[in-house]
Image 1 (cartoon, rainbow, N blue to C red):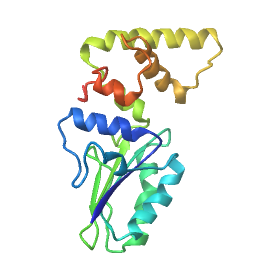
Image 2: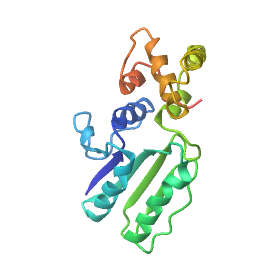
Image 3: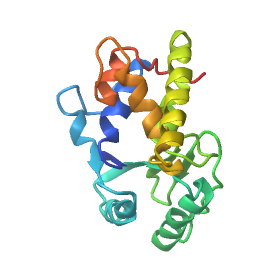
Length: 199
């Protein structure tokens, strides 16, 4: 039996780095060389339900995970589509409500299904909101400075950065001020620009 984790875009690199940082081992049958095969990149949040349905219909998977962003609609509305899919797939399933620890479900065949909605299963937002929370304490002042600069930039240039994208501006500007600027997010976790632990 196999396992799969469906993610948006390139989030898999960040998730893998955070899990490694927190001391979690690789899923069964996966290693450093094969972990990329564990993740299925949806390329957009809109495509995740299609991949989720396909995974449910494939009996080879005994564990199915999803990591996706709440974005502006919030975790409850985001989760509703997946509750509907689960009930249509298995009428014996009673999907739980969203909670702080994510959603964990066992279907009638014993298969495990887990869903995590970024940033914390209770707030609107996305991966970069989660990453802000794991910036090391000693770097918080850099983040505060970055936020001031972004706000001044937005004020001067007629709100060039939308509210929905501002968090990404904060996080990537924060990375631009490090000793090795411009690192991809996963590498930035490994380099301790994010410490893997929520504050």
